[in-house]
Image 1 (tube, rainbow, N blue to C red):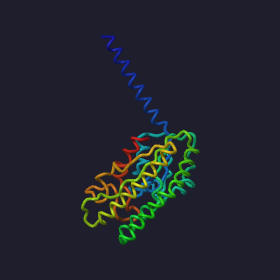
Image 2: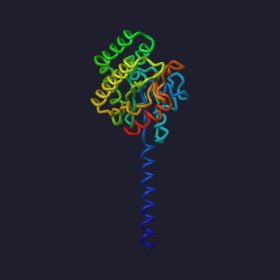
Image 3: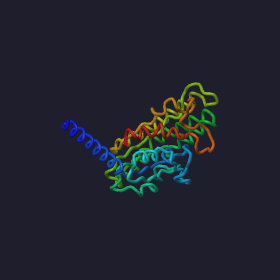
Image 4: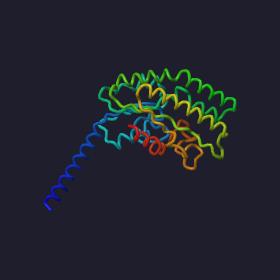
Length: 259
């Protein structure tokens, strides 16, 4: 009996110690979130962390920081940011103490949302021309922008785990009342795939983790019965961005798996 009691007490103390160690490990993480509107939370609403940059407590970086009780959280992502502006305006809080960095960047470099708007409002010729131009930029110019950004991140945070998150495909291609044609939707999705492939390529070249979010949004894109991405909406800036559920149920689980 005494032996069993001692064993039980030992196991209990061991579990308590393990739980305490895990909690301490979680709370020791210094996390910096960089990027554009897909990280700041445009579309998620409640821009309570920065009105000018549209940073939301419903955005996936803020949700992850709250769930993991981080030691520090620097939320630098800003709506409208390009890779160049992330480099010039958002890297100031990175340091040798930074443990985790997340970033979305590249969509604005390629003018992706503007292209989608052209496909929504213009002719087939205008839509496909805009998509071709975006594809050309991604193939010929984006890698240089990403390499510069990723090199700067690594230089300023040499020990950090860096997670580069991609962008979801925007559209379901099933029947959809009032939507653009299936051909346009397929072409937009294909350009998103091209963009993500370049992000993956450059992230892995720098030793970063690439996190593919497209599968998480499957069945919940624009035209789905329950969409996690805004179609044309008001305010206009929220159009073609994840809503609050897209951040909490789309992006957040992906970061949980890769951080």
